[in-house]
Image 1 (cartoon, rainbow, N blue to C red):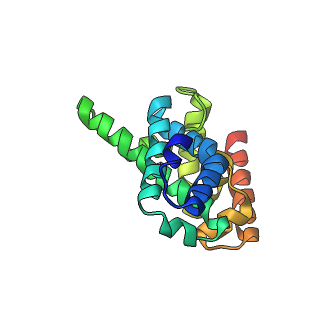
Image 2 (image 1 turned 45 degrees about the vertical axis):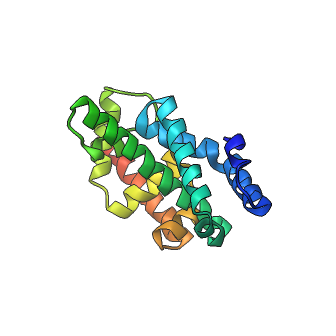
Image 3 (image 1 turned 90 degrees about the vertical axis):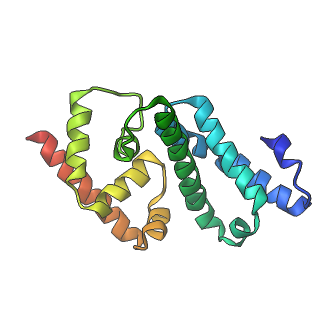
Length: 173
């Protein structure tokens, strides 16, 4: 990807995009891979996002640095979903976005405990689900989650605490 960045005309824009690539590309890859379950598709998703940023660089530069990670997360998630959707359509398979988005981060499949936990997590309030996913699945800090969800850092921490407590209680039963 850095070779592609060399084609940017303005040195300032090239430096900013190179810095963003070096800082967030691994994180973006993990997000894309968790959706696509395919290394080359995940790499394509990350590259596609940066190519698009090269075409219209102005918007990202205007964002405060603390919001850039969230913006890139949304971009790569949407691109990865597009890739999976296209793959499913080409193969003639049914497309269910909820199955792709709500799957566990690891390579665990078919484990009864994980399946049970996923079902119980769906019963939590949406804000608690979002906080858990953003924190444990995507690695966001609570102050970043607060900004993304429009709540305070303390509210994000409390939502995570309540969600974990609810899930712990269900697992004990």
